[in-house]
Amino acid sequence: MGTNDMSATINIHTPEQKASGDFYGQYFWKDYDVQDAGFLRFIVDHVGHERLLTASSLLDIGAGSGKFSILLKQAYPHLEIEALDVSPDNVNTIEANAAASGLDISVTEGSVLGLPYEIGKFDIVLCVYMLQHTPDPQRGFLEAARVLTPGGTVLYSIGRENGLGIVHTKTRGLFGKVPSSLRRSTVLPFVPLYWSLLKATGSRKASENDLTIDLVDWLYNPLQKFVSESEMVSWFDEANLSYTPLGYTGLFKSMHVCRGIKIERHS
Image (tube, rainbow, N blue to C red; front, side):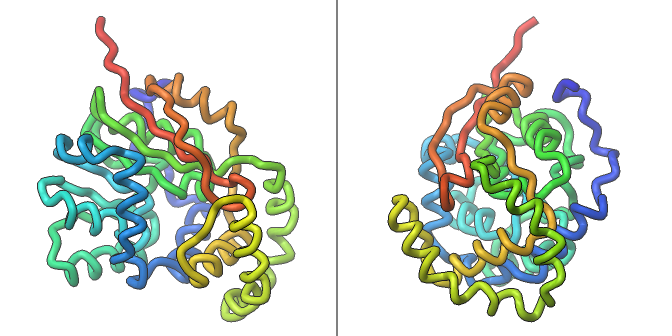
């Protein structure tokens, strides 16, 4: 299916995606991380300062607390920013955080699987750390590319199959039985070990809270769909995007960070 044929009218609220959205609404990204400059550096380093200066519009997909949107609006006030999230709770959080920061950011409830925007609307699209939490990462990837203007920049961070995906799949039934109120406490004994492993592999999170969130996410998120790197590369071709690999984040290179530029097609 070509990117121009993607429809924004598909059923976006599948039970799987609704469960994953509710999971994030319950556990993550309320307000503690909105002013963490490390998130801004991540976007600037991977999208590019000059590109952010020359762009006029940006879409933040799976915006969570609105952290990327808020930090970018503060640093690049000329940008018209749209923040989108599938969780109504997160949408409320983004609106509250933006209002508290005195920023004008448009907020929409919606899914990456059926973006409510026309073709070529945005100069920059962020699709970071969220495709693995959808029933169809490829469709979400193509939707992000569909709404990108020709010559525009899209930044992805995609859950990479590193051999541990099968472990996650096989343990959903077991970990799903752990009461929500106990999930944070069950991962705390493993945080020091996780920290040591991240140091050994050259990757570190900013705080104990970040590490705790990572472990809760991996162990308890009901929806995780990891993708092989070769498959990701083929999606860039399908979406008429250039492909620039930018490295990896997470334990055992679990997330692949990559950038695409929308290739202009002339008839």
